[in-house]
Amino acid sequence: MGMSKKIRVVVVDDSALVRSLLSEIINRQRDMECVGTANDPLIAREMIRELNPDVITLDVEMPRMDGIDFLGRLMRLRPMPVLMISTLTEKGAEVTLRALELGAIDFVAKPRVGLANGINELANQIVDKIRVAAVAHVRRAHKEPLAAEHAHAPGAPAPARPPAPTLIGRLSTEKLICIGASTGGTEAIKEILVRMPADSPGIVITQHMPPGFTTSFAARLNGLCQITVKEAVNGERILPGHAYIAPGGKQFSLARSGANYVAVVDDGEPVNRHKPSVEVLFKSAAAVVGRNAYGVMLTGMGNDGAKAMREMKDAGSYNYVQDEASCIVFGMPREAIAHGAADEVLPLDKIAPALLTRLSGATDRLHHRI
Image 1 (cartoon, rainbow, N blue to C red):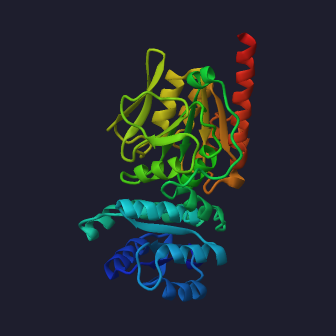
Image 2 (image 1 turned 90 degrees about the horizontal axis):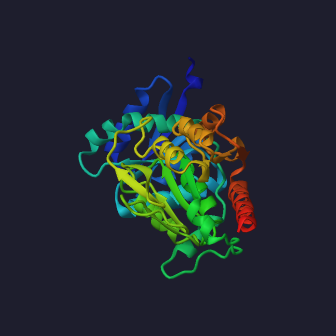
Image 3 (image 1 turned 90 degrees about the vertical axis):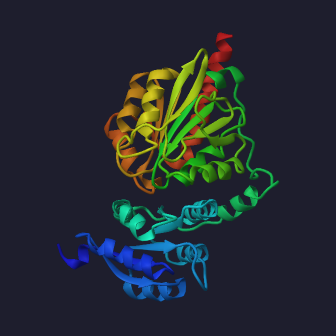
C-alpha cells in the first residue's frame, strides 16, 4: 500500500506529551501517519494549508485561540474531518457538544489522571475514530448552532419554531418511539426531538457516548425542545412528552409494570462493543412494546442495533432509517436496511414529519374506534 493511501493526520494540542503520544499511536498504524503536530491553532492553520491532511485531531483548550473558535472558522472556510480531544469534565462536555454542533465528526474523552497510560488505553478508540472521520460526510458549519445557543441560555424560551401538532393523550401513552445513533448522532437526535410536540409519545434513545457526557447532552436538548429530555433512571416510568437518554457507560432497556413502560438501567456487559448499546434497547422494545413501537435508526458506524431493529419489525413496529446522503456515517443505517429492518428510508429532516403524520393517522383511527 503506497504512502498516498495512508490517512494523513495533523495533531493540534498544546500539550507536548499529548502531541507525542498521539503521534506515536497514529504512526503505529499501517494505514495512517501523523504528518504534522501543532501546539496552537494559528500554527495548525498554516500546517493544514501546506499538508492538506485527511483528518485533524483538535484539543479544546489552547493558547491564542481556543479550539472551538478555530473549529468554527475551519468549518466555515475549509470543512474537513475533525476529531475532538476533550477533557472529561462538565465544562469539557458542554464544549464538546458545541464542537459537534459546529461540525466535528466525533470526540475522544481525555482521561483526568495518568495521561500517558490513559491515552495509550484509548489508543484503539482513537485510531478507530480517525478511520471513521476519514470516510465521514463532513458538513459545512451553519448558523443554527448560534440560535441554539441563545435558546439554551438560562431562562431563554424554546427556539421559535411553528408549534408541533398535538396528539391525543391516550395514543401517546400506548406508543413508544425508540431511537438509536452513534457517530453524528447528537445533532441528528436534536433534529428529531426539537420537532416533537409536548404531548408526543415517550421517546427512548441510545446514543453511543461515554460516561460524563450524556448528562450535558440531555440538559442541552431539554433547553431546546418542547418535550422534557433527561437521562434515563432505573425503574422510572416512561411518560408521554418525555425523552430518555441512555446514560453513558450503562445499558438501557425497557420493561413493563402493569400498563406502564419502565426504564431498566444497569451495569450490563458491552454488546457489539458498546455500552450503552442500541441492540439492548431495541431488543427489549421488540419484546416489550411490539407493534406499539416506532423504531428510528440514525447515523453511526458499525452494525449495533441492526438485528434487534429487524426483531422490532417482526414484532410489528414501524421503522424509519436515515438515508445515506444525510448521514455523517452510513454504517448503522446501512446494516439496518441490509437486515430488512426498514419500513422507510428518509433524509434526516423528513423523519420527524413522517413520524408525526403516521402518529396523526393512528390518532384518526383511534377517533373512529371511539
